[in-house]
Length: 320
Length: 264
Image (cartoon, rainbow over all chains, first blue to last red; front, side, top):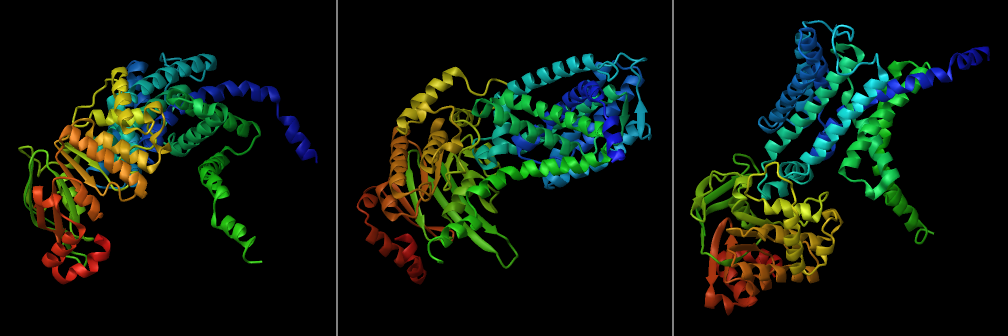
């Protein structure tokens, strides 16, 4: 009993409250990454696994450019460009070479591991200190990081809202919804897929660049599992958005809730750390959460109509 | 308006599933021709429409639409010239997008899609007007998701989308086959109206002989990847289902017996 008591007495509520803002800041950054995942997963209807690689690429490019004297703002812009190119490569592997999208993403991600290492001079991580460089965002000043994160999120959601409302953006959405109809309406669906994958990975690399500046280093493994965290954010955001606003939720609102999903994910992560649970268990925890949320729509349908239910209903009359 | 010359297509060549779906098909449509296409299962009706639409490249022969040789163009490039309505009502529209968004996509068929806003105010007024013609009340639900519509409504919307910009050629691939008889009748009426109004050059595949006779100025029958009968004008207007069955048995011979049920 004394072990349990000492465990609880070692937890300080103030300590948790103190850590929450950092969770919010990180959640905002990963929310941007989740917006990228949203583009492929929800709009293009493709599960793109390149993001695990491009998130690290974003960090690697940003940090290496900054320590070689490039302006941090310019650095994340270049990082975004690198992500765009990597995403386009996944798209080309898929559309030009006929490789299934999920495999194309895995191949890109796998190749990027080597490329990311090469970018970082074959070191697994590279530090960038906020004391030496004027970083865009840093974990050293959490309130400011939250403000910067919010500005990034607002601008990105604004641009996405605009773009997906344009002729080109509509064509991209149509491609994800109904490829056959899109072709009949004269849309080049292969171009749209490449573009969607590029845009998605551009956003992911941008988030990777921000995350590296926030934490003060780039790590070749920083993107590991990014797709699952992104999916978690998208799904948590959708469920909460639906519950709070339902049908009134417009496209910009949906995007905002994806970011909210990212923040919630990081708040839970903070809580897990505070409870002194092993953070290595977080991956298991995340996978379970994502599996549950992905299963909910299916199980809901099953609850309404299923063979089991049909058998039960039928038995009531005839089998007696 | 459409000239198909010696077009052939074989599926799964060199395998046990090899199927010569089109066998040197020749067909010429004049401007304003409304041609109904009949034939048994596997006769090549849908394959011919897909060949014209450019779903896949043909093995040999050429396809010319309105003077332009489209043989080497993929479907999305031919879309500038062609309006299509499919058998499955789910195929022709984007379910998760709004009615007006779907129409806006159709309004840009064959045009470059840039960074201008996807649906403009001026367009919405035009959409409303065009939807009113369908007489389904869709004009009051323009921001509703298409997935909420019934099969008949979706098919009517697809027809409107296919003809929104006057196509050089309208391809209807059994577009009423998946609908209940009453709805099918309505969609067919709407088709007739649009084709007449815009004097559209049309190919309509159907399994219903009565429909094939009642609509259009020309009727072709296909068998084993070939056009085996081409009836037009006066002759067609006098046509009866019995005539057609008789004609078919004469040309197609024995095989017809097994197809009778399907065609009737």
